[in-house]
Amino acid sequence: MIIGLTGGIGSGKSTVAEIFAQKQIHIVDADAISHQLTQAGQPALQQISMHFGPAVINPDGNLNRSWLRDYIHNTPTARTQLEQILHPLIATECATQLRHTPQATYQLLMVPLLIEHQIFKQMCDKIIVVESNLELRIARVMQRNQINRETVVAIINNQASDEVRRQEADFLIYNNDTLESLGSQVDHIDRVLREQSNRSAQATPLF
Ligand code: ATP
Image (tube, rainbow, N blue to C red; front, side):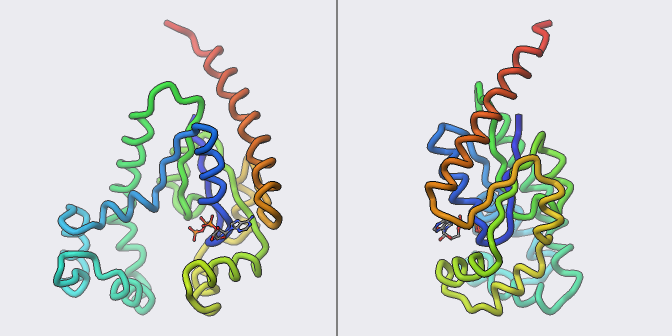
């Protein structure tokens, strides 16, 4: 089974993923894959530079992430164009990493914008949504990334709302409390998912 893990910025996805990883659950991280695919010399970078022009590449061959961020901010269609280039490549690499894991009970596919993008949503059998109070998220991200409130709020406003995410959730994790509380919610979901994947493995005919 492939279980999508998502939530708004600063909700605690990575923290939740770490707890699952401690239980030997394999995590495929779409954000990390996106970063790898846009390293210097990667084919995706050539496609991005053909589309957006040479300013998108730094003299050292790396992606000029701040230029691209500003460009997307000022050009309404640019975000969709970038997603059209990157998402199929990210989805293919996610599928490869998910395929190459032997004997998994279930695996997690962590995608920040899972609900927003069908290409990732359709890869998942079930979805876990991590939810956290808005003010807590803003404070956590401001502290973690050393950025101002306005920037965090702008990112949040570009993502699906809690209500929309909640409608897609098979499991909801509330991350408004301690790490211990987070751990016990993950324990419960892990138990349910292991039971479900055992049951579906038993139900699968051998031939
Ligand atoms: P992003 O979408 O930006 O990648 P995320 O949803 O993966 O964020 P995390 O990186 O897991 O969120 O959490 C954001 C910050 O809040 C991190 O610095 C993390 O250590 C902290 N944090 C998350 N949950 C808790 C918690 N329950 N108690 C204390 N700190 C927490």
